[in-house]
Structure formats: C-alpha cells, structure tokens
Image (cartoon, rainbow, N blue to C red; front, side):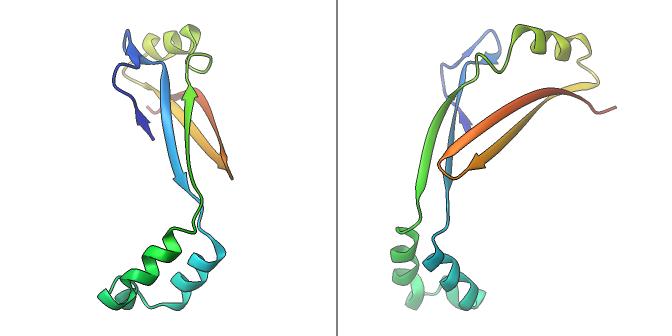
Length: 106
C-alpha cells in the first residue's frame, strides 16, 4: 500500500493505492510440496514464474477523504504525544476496506 505523490494536501493524504495478490491453488500446492532450498533454484525458476502468473493480482485506489475526517484528525492532533492514527486494512478477495481510528498508545 502506498500514498501517491501529490495526494497529500495539508498533511493529510487524500487517497491510497493498495496492491495485493491472492495465491492460486496450484501455486500453494507447489509451494507446500517444494522444499525452501529448492523453491528458488535455477531449475525451479521457470516453474515459479509460470505458477506466479496464475495468481490473481489486484490494485485498488481508495479515496481517504470520507475516512480521514477533520473530526478524526482533530482527535489525534489533540494529544499528539500519546495518540496515533490506526489504519485497519482488510482484504476480501478482490476488494479492500480501510477503517481508521485514533489509538492511544501510552
């Protein structure tokens, strides 16, 4: 997940881009049945590349404007020394959800 250049205005990001991969059954089976020391060997490199290509790959841009509200930012700024912004990112197959809450850590 990355914040995009130019997406930050006034110190608060407006959007984030999340990228993730779901492992296919074929890739998981090969990974489980191939010892670690052989998995990335020259002999298995082509097998790995072919199986990696079978994994679904997703990219989603998430608008943070409705998530990072001015009220939420004010709560965090009110106690900067002890409060952090906690982002929870949940990946559900081809969708991603982001929730945010202030987190007191001291």
